[in-house]
Image 1 (cartoon, helix red, strand yellow):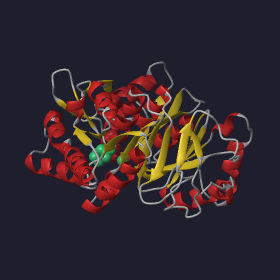
Image 2 (image 1 turned 45 degrees about the vertical axis):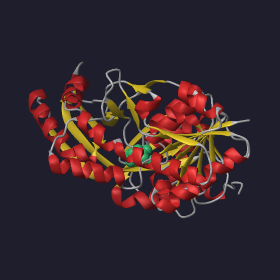
Image 3 (image 1 turned 180 degrees about the horizontal axis):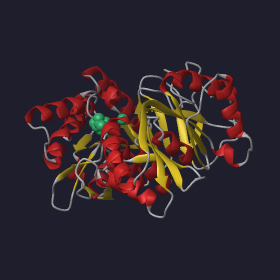
Length: 409
Ligand code: ASP
Ligand code: MG
């Protein structure tokens, strides 16, 4: 007898009919003699609707009240699914995060799970029940409702799978797996049979939105076998594991991109100790996240410093940098918020030389100018003008033969 955790996203529970078909899918697992815990998101659009309601009440609602509000969407779906299961003759019980006791810290709207009580869940499973848990939420030491950040139901599912030592955690969503890139940009994108945790983590943090990043971190840490599949289409989806796949011998596994980028440059900065701190300190103090950072080698006694931020923070970051420019006696501040980041990801980079040069050659042959470059052990990112995004992704997809990957049905 195996224990599964199945998580269904918002579109999979977006209507009464869809909730009924989730119930049938879940029932099948029990019918084949296995145990199952189901984790649900709110109905699609519901969390956004609740956030919009809050904004009509107050421009800056407290995070505590936000969590009381936005955790309600998941309470609706878990109850409805249990009703659908009862209607099919199954025994099933729903729990909110508080009822399970998914204990988190008190960082409202972005809480982290500390511990999960498994007593009730175990007893239910052993009693032949299907356990249905509201995703995205927990409770802190003081009994306050907390939420885990947008997309947090994925993390609830993985955390439950880790805590209860489930055999597999299935994330059912509206795509049938993890793709080599976003099929909306490159229709030749292929589904991957396997991807490693490391690659998935890079893909997620680089803008591929299939899974919440934290859920992948969690799955890696506790070695939870994680599979992404479609709720609507049969298939084996994509398995995320430690091992590198032998089947897929492509040099890289995927291309990720992020459209929400902006870059800022400060030129003629005195090349002295502490300058990077003086530039980025005030940016960090304003709670603005910085992604890529490049500092050039100085040939007079000054240097140029460029970094990227989320496009939403561009104007604010620019204003801060202009003040620092005066203070540092630097030359000037320039910026560009019509840029994007395109990244290739793959553990194959560790054992193959020439991947970067192949990437640059491909972009050059399309006449795409590279504005910034950053690398890690398994990733190469470039910043290019926004108008080149589609072209860059498609050219790289072809050059690295990602359209040749053959996934099993
Ligand atoms: N309902 C939450 C959201 O929309 C959590 C989730 O769906 O994972 O972000
Ligand atoms: Mg989601």
